[in-house]
Length: 482
Image (tube, rainbow, N blue to C red):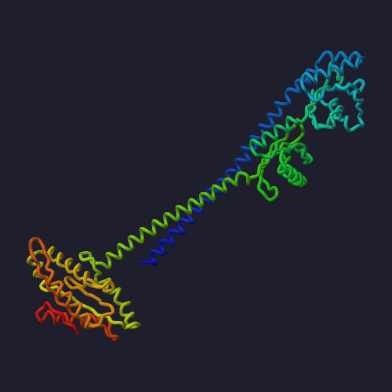
């Protein structure tokens, strides 16, 4: 029975542990896969779209300002009149800068190649000078304007977003380029805002893989930028990033899984890169997994504890029912057979005396016939209580048959056992049972035997049974020992 209980507990333990573990791990990996898909195909593209929309919104105003400057009659008349008063154009550019709060405003004349600025005439643009290539590109393009990110020579070469607008005379002839410049601070602030709000790393890179803008608010971000720059030097990775206008994929950075989304910003000729480490989100899932496992371990322990207690309780009940006489509460014959073997082995190792009593109720059938079987049951219960009260705690008593009781007396020789049997006989005879206004006088016959080293269970009981038969044959209500 113990082995079966152990196997059942072990099976339940394995079943619960494996079931909870597989369920929790499956839930974890499904959540991680869902997280990766959501980051790569939903959240990061949404952030990219939002930033792009913000950039376009911020660029509408300077484009409109440049358009007004290009169509301004004063500017066109001043060029047509041979640029006679330079102070007038300088004042115009300065007022434009102050009115619209731009970092710079400018005009380059096609006729003189003069570069005018709110601070005055800066220089003359030249085709062979690299810093002036923007003007000749604007002069030759077919669109009315372009957005160009370049360093501002008059502002300590600060990175600036220029709106370069073509200017025409009244006959639609190209006469120069004008526009305004904005620092990239607005874009930088937008990057910082989104990094703080969504905990994502945001970068702008050019087609060569150089990082042009990034959030620089923390040392960790700077390290991320360094790592990304090193990764962008790989041709395969750069090709993957710039393969299309919008790209979404997973990769690793510093051995950590990351999700990326890139978007081409045609106004800057840059690529917007939105990157997020999966560990930032999977860490939460991992903590949830650990909590689930702890909870599962607790539930498993509770279930196993309840199962163990229930099985043990049922086992005790079953063992009690299997080894106990229901009427008297004494051991039954089956229980005594289980107890006999270790008792005999113990006597062989340590022969300190073992005696056996067989007790039979005299004329028990007459009690049943005269007063009913319930009276017989009451007699049996009465005797069981009476006998137990006069035995030692180490002695064993069982109901051997219908009206027979078997008693094992440890550390007791034949003479002492016979004396004990006589005491029991007198106690039973002197304590009649009161049952339903009747006094039932009870007597018993007893046979006594002592264990010998060569005895088996059958021999020991057989001698006591012969002695009991002799007591009954000699008139009952007596003790006979052999």
